[in-house]
Length: 327
Image (cartoon, rainbow, N blue to C red; front, side, top):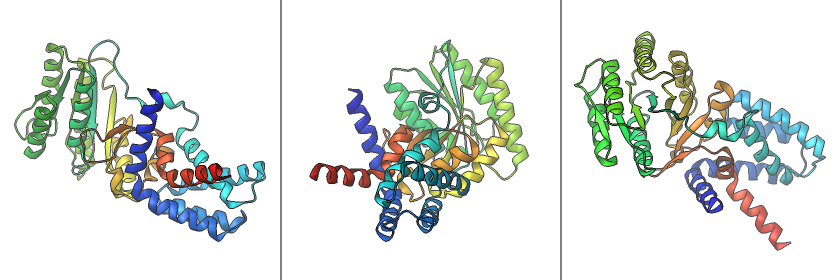
């Protein structure tokens, strides 16, 4: 069963990362065809390929340095053998010293209500992601309540309400312009009274005034911490993968405003710059917890760096397997 599950996750990442892979794989294959031996020029061009996939300059420098050392250690001369080392190093770059389990799973409260606080600018897919997560948790047998804390625009309240109906979960909402902290407070009270397992809180996504943003998020967090000690159990920042390095600057702003514990990367299937996953992890030390790999309600996946790297290198891996079988 586990093997089948792993295969389906790997195939989802393979399908979802098609745009990044087509760009990335083509460039690496061209590079390997161009250079028969591993030399300084090869590494210089590889550096450019990785940077163009938005892996991030610092992450790329670190990775190239480690690649050069590993190639020397293994005495690799042929460029085609470097592909395998690149995929190994990408996984290492993501996980660092931490265990896989500690990074991937969303934290839960073992003693009562679990609260997830969602933050992020408008238009990144925040409300849709909340709806998808609510649907998944409900499918797993959890009792879920949503709190429509983005009171800045009526559209966000209506959208979350619609997702609540679709997922069959309770939605707590006030009118447009209400105090977000008051909505979250009522959400907590309602979730507790209904004996809910999870409360998911939406928040406003405007970035025009960082001071207001910080104040609002701080107030919401204080209410949550006061009502449920130890909560929120995750502060999840939603970023749009198609914006590349712009997503990085948003991540920096929000991590200054609140203690972001995990990233949700949406629209990963719509970008050729999927390397942003590695850049965020490397530069901000914030793990990617969930990724959006398509439009369907089931296309929200727990992030798995091994499946991600497989998605980047699937064509190469399958090519190598076919060559080995033929031998």
